Length: 291
Ligand SMILES: Cc1cc2nc3c(=O)[nH]c(=O)nc-3n(C[C@H](O)[C@H](O)[C@H](O)COP(=O)(O)OP(=O)(O)OC[C@H]3O[C@@H](n4cnc5c(N)ncnc54)[C@H](O)[C@@H]3O)c2cc1C
Image 1 (cartoon, rainbow, N blue to C red):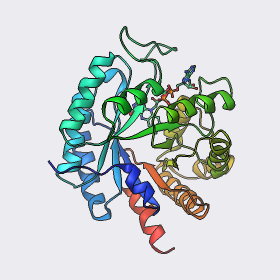
Image 2 (image 1 turned 120 degrees about the vertical axis):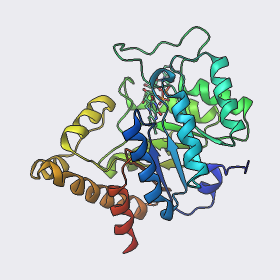
Image 3 (image 1 turned 135 degrees about the vertical axis):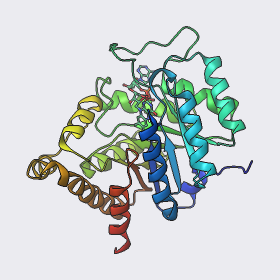
Image 4 (image 1 turned 90 degrees about the horizontal axis):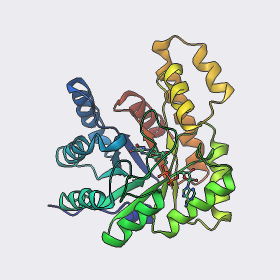
């Protein structure tokens, strides 16, 4: 099994990186979509791709299955996500062992959201309470792993204020995180202010901006309701002015402008929440070619 490359190394190389996030498909049609998307991205060789981990461990097997396919059939460096939801510490170690045995050497370490119908996150008996606990566990038992953590330019919805959220983010960094990937945002000023606040708080690791090329107004409203991201008036009006079928193009153009602005400002790269679809990602890459 070829040894993977730590994302830490990509970031240290100093060249802006490009990464794409997939999610584990729920059915056969979804499976075909992720494979078709992976195929169309293969010639562009993202520096890494990540694959999310479903609530309550419901996607444990599918996350692993597609993580392997993405690496073995498409040659991507793959970072599986892992959450604390519904798992004991021993189960988390088992899953991490599986990742390591399969040759993965990066993990996005998250607390996860409370299960559907619950408003408050509760660790299972013998489980972990915060993202920082999972980071500490990975760092202790798999010291060679690259560890990513989530960061929230508009604050995590449960945090009482930004300063408190940043102090918790600092705990994750001190526990051993290598880089932060942000929650989606649509106004680059939010990202830049967040990075400045991180630096003031003593958080020095790279902050990779996570961008969602919007596919429809309805969908982005749903996502933003869940994660607390705001939709700028300008983007909302552009989407409202178009038919649903033309909204993905608006979303891709907005994301392209965000990427351009972020790279100009020295961001370490960009991470696309591509939702297992390739058209917007390809449009963004094509747009950047001319720059
Ligand atoms: C890049 C990215 C990828 C994601 N991928 C997935 C995925 O694959 N699967 C999935 O289910 N979800 C995913 N999520 C969503 C994520 O699980 C949720 O945002 C979750 O609510 C928080 O996870 P966290 O690891 O950031 O939590 P934490 O860092 O634990 O923070 C959660 C809340 O607890 C607070 N907190 C932290 N430490 C303490 C402390 N010591 N005392 C008191 N309060 C504290 C924080 O301020 C915050 O409000 C992702 C999010 C991002 C940004």
